[in-house]
Image 1 (cartoon, rainbow, N blue to C red):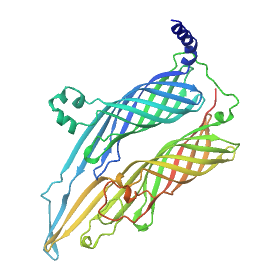
Image 2 (cartoon, rainbow, N blue to C red; image 1 turned 120 degrees about the vertical axis):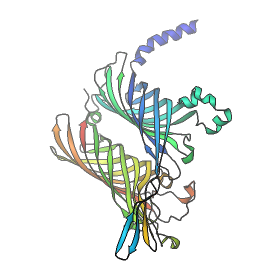
Image 3 (cartoon, rainbow, N blue to C red; image 1 turned 60 degrees about the vertical axis):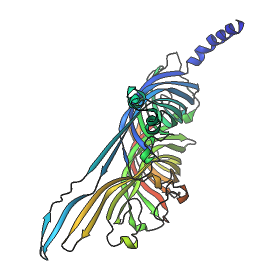
Image 4 (tube, helix red, strand yellow; image 1 turned 30 degrees about the vertical axis):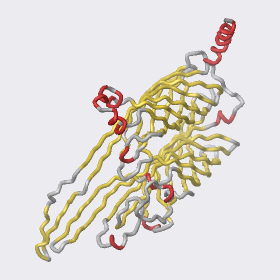
Length: 467
């Protein structure tokens, strides 16, 4: 009894102190499915789905956040396959005339949908900056329970146990989360936020391509501190007061430096966007890091069979190789680590240099193949549109060097707009070693590829002040 009374006394004394560091809230948003580590040529396009839930945060110290909760999300996967079709067939009547004939073979189209719904229990550890406008970056793990009615509900009873064991997907799973958020403190108790996260899982859910479910998720939410909590400002911490949040978006002009057949690879244009954080370490020197989503890749336009790499046709293929036009998309989540030097007062010029690390999100090729068959009396043209998964050929990460220039123009009282250009040079061969491939290719790859890209972007520079 004495021990119980002592425990209750300590709890009543300490609870008001620790409870001030709790935040509870809810979030709603959207996820874009991503079938990671899949094999084969079939490509499942990213599809939007819902994500929502409740969370609880605890801040043991000013710069650290522990977060958990419960959320529900559904992942949708669409598979679209176009088969060959025959657009033109010309029959020669004489050397000077011909008669076009429409194809009697209609193009075939295959569509397949998959849906997986999960109840997730995440546990995250995140680092937090201070101020009315603050950021959180970190990661963790989660445990998930599959909730589909056809696997959990009454419908499953129509299948025998043997069928369920062989055909049903795993009922439980776990995975990793990398997350970040931008938070705005409305009052001492209320805050609003926008967050993004990348998820991966452990189990395989789409067997025919050995696909593991992942996603890119964006949510908005509200947090509430139910207990009185005075804002704790570090008055002498000038670095926190001058820290800058830099959201940006732009165009990424990318290519590849190949050790073989350099002139066969074309440049491509895609999207780049993200959020950077600038931490001052001196009067005009700072560290710049963040999280960027970058779409890199290259193009091919040649006579050959492969859509992700230039391989000259073999001797038996040279008689009638297809004309292949392909755009290869390689999507990365990039983390830059750069020194940033500022010059000027009103118009500020910033020169930055350093390194980057990129985590592969997607790799696929899309385009068309055209085959022309010549006959004694005419010829036939066959065309195929394709979207093929190529993730099996590329390494899961990239790293290299980065150089950038940013011009800031003060427009608002609370911040500036800027235009910038970044040049990144990959130092890692992005093609997998043959020993790392799960399936040995029917060809020999002696080529090495390195990412090259130039990004032109615009954005905002928002100083974070303590108020």
